Amino acid sequence: MSTEITDPETTVLTIGRRIRHFRAAAGMTLDDLASQVGTAPSQLSLIENGHREPRLTLLQAIAAALDVDLAALLDAEPPSRRDGLEIALDTAQRGPLYATLGLPRVRAGKRLPTEALEALVGLHAELARRSSEASATPEEARRANTELRRAMRARDNYLEEIEDAAEELLGTVGYSSGPLTHRTVEQIVSHLGFSLHHARDLPSSTRTVTDLEHGRIYLPPASLPGGHGLRSLALQAVAHRVLGHTHPGTYADFLRQRLEISYFAACVLMPRHAATEFLLAAKRNRDLAVEDLRDAFGVTHESAAHRFTNLATSQLGITVHFARVGRDGTLFKGYENDDVDFPTDVTGAIEGQTVCRHWTSRTVFDHNDLAGEFHQYTDTPSGTYWCSAQTGQGADGDFSVTLGVPFTAAKWFRGRETTSRSVSRCPDPTCCREPSADLSAKWRGAAWPSAKLHTHILGALPSGTFPGVDDAEVYAFLESHAPR
Image (tube, rainbow, N blue to C red):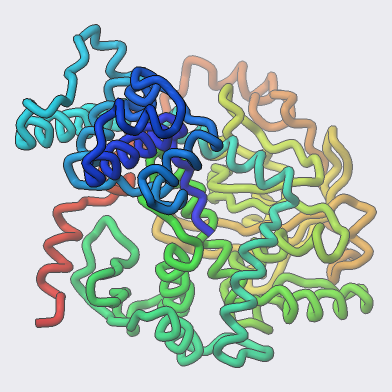
């Protein structure tokens, strides 16, 4: 299921080099081959150097003249290590990044030593890496995340190909229904050629580390508080293999892969067929509740709420929104396809914005009974919504998880009879962002609050093979844990 895309120019150049390789192996000159295929030597030279794409009929004639299969000419692998380096150099020098430098192109002729060629290719790779690092700013990441959220909205937050892959994998271990046990996760991991190992000294910048050489996946200790998430971490680690991921080339690639592995883990922990049957039965009884989905599959409330958004529209015909919000109103993440009006910045990003004080995501903190779900109707400029919220506590403090639907869909949910109701006029600043005239008159000029500063917004995103990961720390960890 790899989504890697091959550069067309690189493909043409590789074909050319493979033709040259087989021509030389056959002891033929350009003139010899040209006379056999009915074209000019100059045209063959352009093809071999990647400056012209050959027609299929000409390729077939060349393959016949060289006595090789057509597939051998179309193979994506360079014919030799030297050819691979020459292709890499040529591709880099054709790119827009090199063009901005105003430097002459280096011809990778036979007289250029292989060591010099390796150095040039390495310099181009480092130049590309540094350029990517410089552009990996918070704004670039926010724009990428916004595009990803919009793409998921267009698909109703439902990725059928990943759903299918998860169900096929579950079939290999005989899963039928109910919560997925740690033992079943181990069987899935083993089926994919890996084994699970717990380590207390995982690099601080990682959640898991996979040793591809020895087929080992390192997880936090099983006794770690919150260890219920270890199943998900293990499944996310193997998801990269199942989904055919390659090293992300951009921050957008990294974010997409993170979304896909989280989606895959949710599909395995709450399989489509079992979760859909469970939810459809609850809908028929007008008794849908996130807490029931959570308990039926032994996952966190947030995981159940987010999984509900995957299936709500595609399987139940209900539009929905989801939000994780801090006690101070900061929106950490959200999804909607029911036209709820999340606040956004100039890039269209919702993360880090402050939601209305009157939304369920915030009013839930005003209620003492936080053990169960809190329900509320909220009238907004974009319509009336029924929402269910529950609070939790994480490393960054208290937060709420909210699932909401339009008023007309509330009839399917437990808690629809709630009498809690609020009115939100946001984004009108007089709703909750501006103080009343009396308070403003009293305190303006007489108050000096000391604001919190989220320091991560000031700098570029950390770099590495994967954004935010300390490669040196990871490699040292793997070296110390590799089987001897």
